Image (cartoon, rainbow, N blue to C red; front, side, top):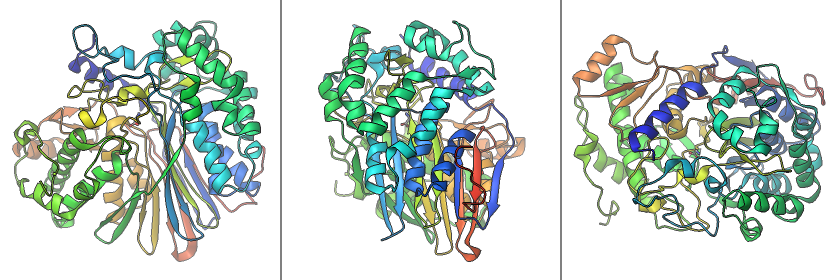
Length: 573
Ligand code: GLY
């Protein structure tokens, strides 16, 4: 049994492993035709290859997503899900493609509780019982068929090639396999793919995934039926059930992506377009930015500015814990939570020189008003179509379970539910009734791809990072609002507060001794991190001069490219 404190320690440890690659910042600038920033050079290359064949940003997004499924198998994949935020230049429409996993039909509210009524954390993290029904394959088919120009056989081609021919793994892969070794070893089909004769592979080892190549080919040939029906579906269900899971063929047959209206907000002259529920990101950003809009942050010294941002974070994570869940299952007072009036009421409780104790905020009552390891990429094409997408299988290597003969690593996204309302999940996040497990329900997420817009500047950003995703996106938006370039959005040292635990988490470089002293003087508590976190992938398009900048977070191994296609792209490179 893992209690709250132990779960928290797991997250802190994971954070340290996830972010310590330390490569230099990767940035590309130019008056190009298209730009791509992703967490892996081969995914960026896949997107460029597809653009070079006449594909648009949506085809490139399908190619990048599928490539990431192959080359970052610990972070996202066909066994997981995500949110793809699309801007369709013709008509100026924005759409969120919700490819979030959903709970199996046989799921029950208390399925992860032991006989003592307490959550048994490993059950929602390791093995097939932890896996929700994947949404990524359906999302890729949907995006390609509805918005792309190329057939799936073209947009999935680079991923199929990487899976079949293999690629050399890096030190990051080595670290993540080491981290999840015990669960990867437990399942023969998983170990056969990701370990080297039972040992943790060193950087440079070539990872080949022929079963995954065949599954991608089945999707390329048959669309969603290639995954959710037929032989692949039967293999998935057979393997999951044989190992103690609860999936059925009906679960797979029923899975559908949902197109949702994104959350739109205004902050000091900026338009922000970001995720809708079941991502908590949009509403949390609305609450935080609405609170902060009441202050002139630029006129404040650094300590006061950080203090106010932290107080806004504290209140938005508290509202999340209480109100947010899958909108198809629970009534969420969205309009009121996103309102200026709600933020104004919260702002009244903020003191300019004193931290609020989270416990002092007490229980939230009725809704306000009336009584009321994951990955990201950003892509823009020559026509101005855009995609910002954050994808996940949750924990590194998800549940650690591969259904034999499919090559698909299943997620452990069930842990994003409040497996025991009131108790923290692996990211230390507390959830409430609104995020309790129910059959067919989507777990609440933090993934928050975003567009930030002024008449002259368009930003695309997002990042992995568990519960810290939303606060990282907030800090990125505030940097954009200050006119900072994308190199600053992705590289500035970060801090975070999530209501509970009641402490500011921060990267080593974020606070010097004096700044920390001043914040402590206001009553803030600290949970310093020994390592950095996040892996933001961002693009800035400045309309004047049609200038593009693409940037990868220096904390990761990403690759950012601006291309004046066709000159710089050689399909098949
Ligand atoms: N599994 C991470 C998230 O969706 O927030």
